[in-house]
Length: 88
Image (cartoon, rainbow, N blue to C red; front, top):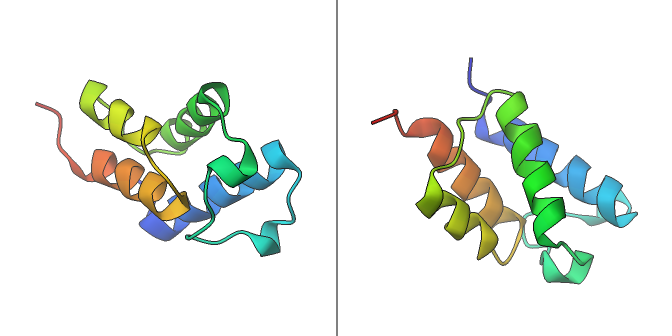
């Protein structure tokens, strides 16, 4: 069963808080990933957690889009889109 978008958002926010040491209550959808010093390894870890939680794997285009995400909402949208796109 695929997680709902709010569950994905909660997972992403928790992972970002853990990796950055930020107070989870201070993070929201508009939190900029660069402000949290999110690098490609942190992003890969978050994407792996989302996939393990039931979100679909990202294809190459979606992965590139995730790497370009500016903020939490953009990253959650990419993960949510991947989970809603049926495999080819």
